[in-house]
Amino acid sequence: MVSVSGVRGRVGEALTPEVVTRFASGFGAWARTKWSQSPRTSTRCRVVVGRDSRVSGPMFHRATIAALQSVGCDVIDVGLAPTPSIQLAVEHHRAAGGLAITASHNPIEWNALKFIGPSGLFLDGAEGTAMRGVVESTIPRATWDALGEVESDDRAIARHIDAVLSLPFVKVDAIRKRKFRVALDCAHGAGGAIVPELLERLGCDVHAINVETDGRFTRPPEPVASNLGDLERLVRDSKADVGLATDPDVDRLALVSDKGTAIGEDWTLALAARLVLRYRRGPVVANLSTSRIVDDVAREAGARVVRAPVGEVNVAVRMRTEGAALGGEGNGGVILSEVHLGRDAPVGVVLLLQMLLEDNAPLSSIVARYPQYVIVKEKLDRPNAPLHAVYDALRQGFSDAEADTQDGLRLSWVDRWVHVRPSGTEPIVRVIAEAPSAAAARELVARSRVPLDGLGR
Image (cartoon, rainbow, N blue to C red):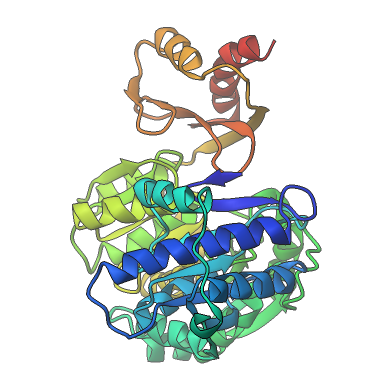
């Protein structure tokens, strides 16, 4: 599948070394053209490459490096690293772009290439279209005397940690004195290469599972509440103040409360906003599938929420145009522009601990102060017919709702909403609804399925 998120597929089926090589070399050729047309900070075109811990990662890593060399790009190899660390490395080296080899939250049989532009952001729609045009054309190859060279950068993660700990409103010494007890689950992903060290530098007493960076996922890698039973038990057994769960490429953070209950990924952005809005003015940018709890937290601080289409780059670009204090997505992705315009689980970690320090209250009691919502999510096979007929039927069926058509269709009311959109990472349609009760959310999903089921027949 090719989308704004990159190119991904099941290893050995849709995704092969040949496919990865084609896209990597096409990206390199596109990056060289962009680099040649812009003010140059180096005499050679350089591209950053890194990967998460997936078993197929080393194979695709080697293929990616060779592909970039074949079009004359020098490679800065950061090795196994979180995606946000790779994005920061692109900025640090003022590179022409970057390639992150990761399928993020997808199951173990998947892998992917994520395309990063020279700003450290993922490619937007126009850039992605231009890059794919190169992939689909005759890719210009370098001659023997113009092949790219390779250098290693083993400081990408260290610089990332330093950047996070340098945030002016994160009081590292005070957090260290508090000695938080933290339970941690890195899902055998790249989180094991950064989060334990970050927590150690913050003086936390860490009780960890699944921190081996071998890609042998022992639970489904997406950090949704239903996959965090082991972490919930670890929080209870260790009497931890909080449980932290990351996905394989460490751009998403989910939380388990001191009671040993997974509170849902949407709370990560909301609680981060609770802290940041004490220190920064401006709106919060969230995607259309993010919980209303973000609106409640922002309203409490006198801020507004701006909605953007699903996709990290869409949120990041809107943050830049809106002058946002914070942004992110309801999947546990927090974006703080003072570090970089990308989802970043380590940023979420330090913001959460600083909030717990300042509030001096258990996470469970902080969450209990706010309205409680239930989100219901369904995945349906994508129909062959266009989806506009579904959207028209839904708008007629929910004529009292406020409609947002930036990304599929989102229908909202004062205390509930439903969002129907085609996935950018899987061949499915996502139907997501939120309401004050599970029954009300399920009813929204069920009513929204009717026109989709009709198209599927």
